[in-house]
Amino acid sequence: MKVLVIPEYESSGGTLSFLKKLLMIHSKYSIETAILIEKAQAADSILDFFKKLSAKVYIGQNRNSIFRKAYISIFYDLFFCWKAYSSFQPDLIVVSNASCGLMLGSLLYPKPVIFIMHSYPERKIRGGILAFVKWAIQASHKFVTVSESSANNLSLFMGIPRSSISVIFNSYESINDIEKCVLEERKDKIVLTIGHVTEYKNPESWLEVAAHIVEQRPEVKFIWLGDGQLLSSMRSKVQELGIEKNVSFLGHCDHVELYYKEATLYFQPSLRESHGIAVVEAMSFGLPCVTSDIGGLPESVIDGVTGLTCHPNDIENFCLRITTLLDSSNTRNEMGAAGKERAQKLFSEDIQEKKFIDLYNEALSV
Image 1 (cartoon, helix red, strand yellow):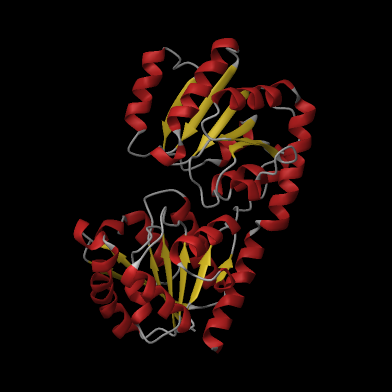
Image 2 (cartoon, helix red, strand yellow):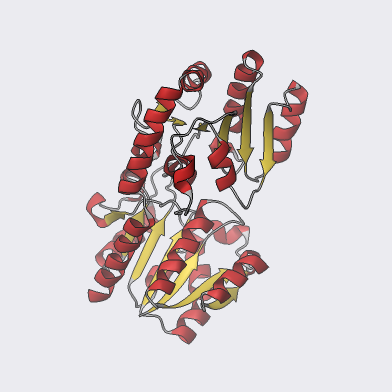
């Protein structure tokens, strides 16, 4: 089996984590793999990772702003893919897409395509793009996303029948010594968040919640790990509030497992979220989670069972839910244990691996 992977990813975060896991599956099953990326994606660290897995790499021109429009993107996609497609001659094309409307041109190649969508449009698409998507469905290409919520939105906004969309949840990375951190009483009161510091992750509300709580509870610390375009401005706001001893935006971290192990609970007030890999990882470490009740988050965090949820801008309720967990080690342990069990049942790497291999075989059998 020869598979051409066309991934969209940033220097860190969920899409890169997903790509690495997918390529590890390819390596395990001895799938001959080629990867097509833009120049801007070709960081030394990721190229080294591709090399270790013996994946062939094709590097194309960066997509400029004009070709980020869905109608024009199709022309870019065709030329972007041509060299890799003609040289590698894949049996299957796999697109890992984070920006709706991009890489649809890959569907025009005469090979089965598995189109994995990590996000969804915020409004209905119309006209030629809608017709193009309907043609792709009839051409037996496969559409995949990461949660039931995301699948429903793709069906609503892109016109893809819900029955034509497979859901394969994000998975957490298994850690050999993970058991040591589950159900033990943690000394520090640390509220942890991991993700890009961007608008949809809702850092403004996060900071407002943190400021309210640390004003009354100086023993509590809020930590956000991750880079992003709002990182600098959020650090400045922390200093303006004079709470830098208790609230930290630490930037990118290569060893997030160390923070999961020390945290008391996990907090994610996202405005939008297809699924949320960091939440699933936190659950695997036995952490109770406080999250917003939008997108795919409630498919991981069951309110009152594995954590607590509320509206993403309900500052008062977020404060109440976090302090409730900070005050009760029994509740934290019960929810943490339930979350870990749910993560093992639904979000393990083994489950994700089996679903992708089954999907590959199904696509090639058509």
